Length: 350
Ligand SMILES: Nc1ncnc2c1ncn2[C@@H]1O[C@H](COP(=O)(O)OP(=O)(O)OP(=O)(O)O)[C@@H](O)[C@H]1O
Ligand SMILES: [Mg+2]
Image (cartoon, helix red, strand yellow):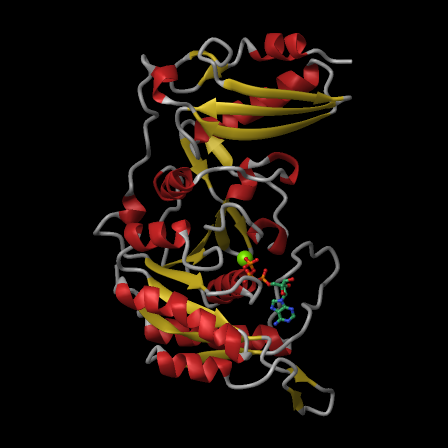
């Protein structure tokens, strides 16, 4: 069986990317747990969400596997200041996307309640906009509950060249997610302020290139991440997702009033799981009726889509679990939604 000492020895040659000293020397190895051939590690770095983190992650996994582990679980934490006296912060690639000159339109997809379909709406709106020829990015801002990579069928990781992270591209959409930085679907156990940092790095350390639309999939509710997004992106637009049930709409109104308070323009309400369409064309409103309309009224905005219940039809070799293809009932509704969004937010000509 592997010993803790063997793991420490294996990690010793690996450097903390900003401090240029051994991870072991700077006290970055916060936890080692060994369970048979499964090794779980907690490693603290001075800068998270950077290209260097991806590099170091790969080095750690290789080293621990070379020492005899079969599976490596890896969690990252932030290295506290006493660990990094001689450290200099990693160089960023600029906050181009967040700068005042940026022409990218940000659209945050929010809801009051979980499970109403924010992520589904995000990935389908993004791919539908890409089908219309738009340059689109997606940030999976649900740091704890990331689901975008799986929903879009992404199993690759971002490419890192020098100090730059290149987002993963799928169906014409550039994607960044916390899921790319987590091994084996391990849970992310971070405190509030670190989430904001991670999110900021998704903008500043990632080479997005020119984008027309950046869609953000937010975690449910009005918590820390939603607040961070409001602060980071004062110009962001919002789409509020609800189900037709009146309680869901009532809770979603809270997310909506937060948008209004922070002067985020609400593009509209998307009512998801609106009805089930029977083969004869009639609509069965399984989850009630009117929630989306009511919410749009309360928020003084428009109901911009009603999306029925239905599973995506998967073509052969398709790994995406949540993408509705064009030519299907729901796929076409998303195409309509994309067109509506394009009418509502005209891209400034470059
Ligand atoms: N129109 C629909 N018809 C059938 N299933 C749907 C529909 N929309 C979403 N779903 C399913 O409902 C579940 C929740 O959707 P999704 O993950 O998009 O919600 P969410 O609001 O992002 O959730 P969370 O708050 O957990 O992030 C998923 O399993 C998704 O596949
Ligand atoms: Mg989600």
